[in-house]
Length: 87
Image 1 (cartoon, one colour):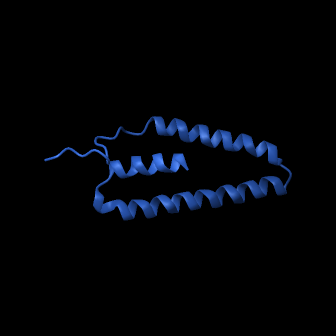
Image 2: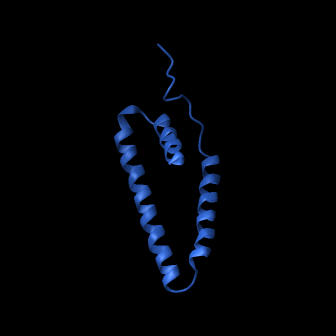
Image 3: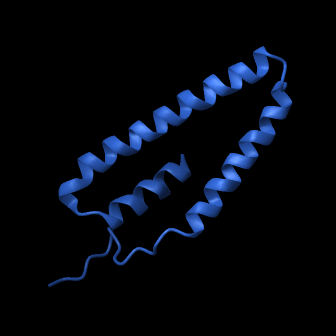
C-alpha cells in the first residue's frame, strides 16, 4: 500500500489537475490487467509443473526489482502537490 501511495503521489505531481480522473482510470486499469496477467501466468506455470509455489517467489522478486530499476529512470517531479507556491 505504501508503494501505491508513492506511485499516485508521483503521478499526480506530474500531470495537470484536469487530467487526474483520466490518469487514475489508466493507473487502475494497468494494475488490474497486471494482476490478471500475473494470476494467469502463475496458474499455468504451477498447473503444468514448470514451477512450484516457492519458485514463483523468484518471479515476484524479479518483477519487483525490474519495477524499482524502471522507477529510478523516471523524470523528477518539478513541483510538489502538497506545497504550491503562493502567487
